[in-house]
Length: 422
Image 1 (tube, rainbow, N blue to C red):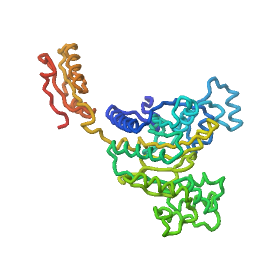
Image 2: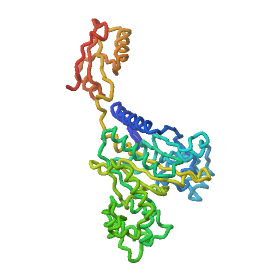
Image 3: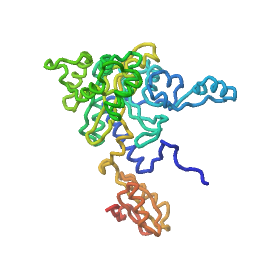
Image 4: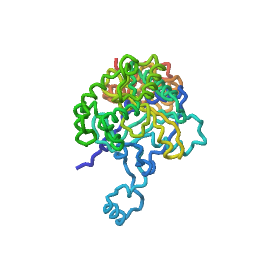
């Protein structure tokens, strides 16, 4: 039996047209972020295993791919098996996000960076997910982060730049959902959830859109996280309809509402008058390192978020030994890229020269160079018997027109182009 020639599960190859669409989208995103004052950096695909498993990545730490130490022997394997600590065999791991590497990068290079550092990271990450539609083991993240700005300006810059990037991609009409981890802490406190169980409770609440209010209440009870008289299902139903009236003086604010956090969310809303902004007290964002404001971008045509982020003021201090404010946003690139098409006006005209076998190579190259110099993308294709199949293939590859090249063709002006796909 022939060996499998498919990529590993959860990973993909990209044909030229797919790759072109992805690179176009990445170029648009990079351009917008750069225009908003962010600078692109690059970090290694691997980090120290201890750093990736330092309690900063929440459940994603369990999905990290470990890289085994070199030169392991039978005794090393036996000790790991006896201790049940498989990670003792690894000293490195593939990054599962770009935020942990950024925190390490900042701690390493702080002296060479400005007091407020605005970074772009666009790169692949790896997670040992169970592959399914829209969920891959290797995927691209598009992150922007602001380090060193403790005020709301960081959140405002991130949200403004992200909405501008989505608009430039043709995904206008987005809604920003806002919440704050302090508000979530107040909700859990009103249910009597002990501090040591709060992160686990948030993991369950984060499943709300999948298992519903009844499912969340049942799971919290099954885990023993919520006991007593708390009507979790009923309160979650009420929370899903919460709006911006909670502290307007007409309706008494609920006991769980953190007034300072809510006031900061109201200020963000007021500073973004042109954006559609919703308050969602059930918004969790799954990463355990968030400390304050959290946000997601939703679109009415799609049943999933297009990206999200928040403030993670405690992370960099874990590396630096000194607290540094930080806030970030990540676009869900794999979710949006398949929704996009490269508009004709945003790419060069792509043409194919279908040449006869007797045409000298030097003349073909001269024709190609002349067209490339005029701004076209050019491919050379030898004429074949089944011309229709050739033309169908180059049309699928994104080419716009073709011209036959015979022995009588002398320069680009003598080429007779015919449109493809017409």
